[in-house]
Length: 259
Ligand code: ADP
Image (tube, rainbow, N blue to C red; front, side, top):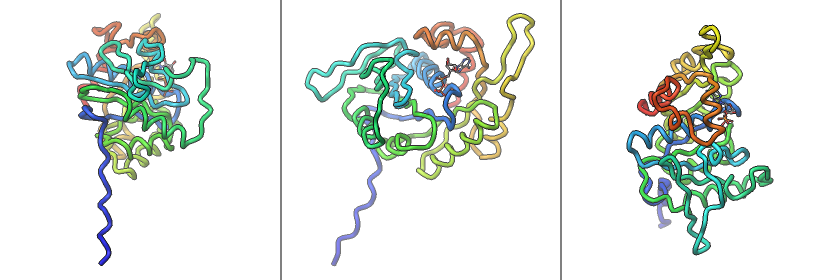
């Protein structure tokens, strides 16, 4: 008699890593990396052991946002020793190439690089590994879900319809992959004028919350559109680290606590 087909194996997390959380977006430029960096440092500030895998292969921003530079060392040519800053252990392809260099790679190479970052990086014991995904629904997202036991995905969107349409596609992809959706975050939500104090909504307001309700996924909170958030990210110390008591940092802490 023919042997029964082997049951599909559940993907395993990297050794020592308890939980993997993916941060995703449909569209680029909606603040996914900013949210990922601030969530990672917020979770670290809450006492968790946190890692960041920057899988945004076409625009790896985490080295800049977490203030890390320099190629990670690999004493034996296999195991890669990650950097650490602000309480977060970081690996990014951005550390392997110059800041101005493009990764002109086809899908299979990207998938190989992601697999290497999962398996060859000495992550150590982590409560949470945050994965900053590229925008969209492509090879990298699928490779992650097939090579790690992803606990869930956080989807970042602006309140704009055009961003929400793509966020919906991202949510649909994770559902098809069997990855739970931890929730939707509205970034660049309100803008407070520092001159008159008036609250503006350049990209609209409430769209992500309404969308979350429609799709039956949790709504994790709103992050304001704010100069300090941008400047902190560019300077290598996310707002949660730079001004932990500020209302902007509170917004990120609220999301981290809702996870
Ligand atoms: P993505 O990862 O979605 O491409 P980024 O996190 O790189 O987006 O953000 C795109 C740009 O917008 C960056 O310059 C970043 O500093 C800025 N940005 C992101 N979120 C905010 C925010 N809430 N307030 C102000 N600027 C933001």
